Amino acid sequence: MQPSNAANTNFPMLEGAIRNPDNPNHLMVVRPVRRTVRVYVDGTLIAQTQNALRVMEMGKSLYDPALYIPASDIIATLDPLDKITHCPLKGDASYVTLNGNEIAWTYDRPLEVSRQLAGHYAFWPDKVKITEGD
Image (tube, rainbow, N blue to C red; front, side, top):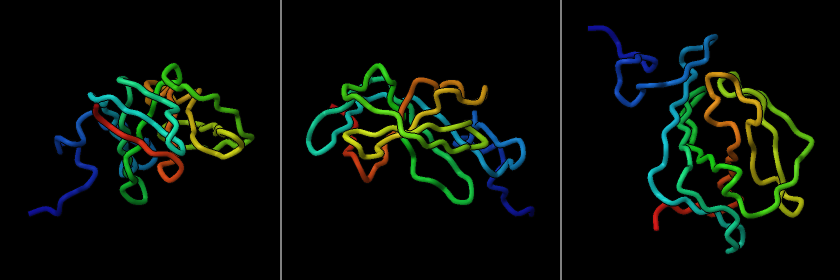
């Protein structure tokens, strides 16, 4: 019997996984969220959508899922921050602030394999309250 391989594409949960070509054990799965998602800061609604994307990523470890909200469904004004990081699966991330506090990031020019993330923002879960459902 062969040991299991976490990168095995036969696992149903990994169907459609986007993989880092340089490291097949670094992967992500993007799924639409079928419920209303709301984002609050200090009790104030700053985003509401029925078109969120859930990104589940595994790299050095299994990361907490991130919800990506379409920019068109963000009510608050987010200001750009002079900060960029790179992900080999998603591309270059730009960061934004709300009232001077870094709150979210976006892949405004994602890699081709991650193009569905274009125009979406993910929020730091320790800086916002995110709810799903009505």
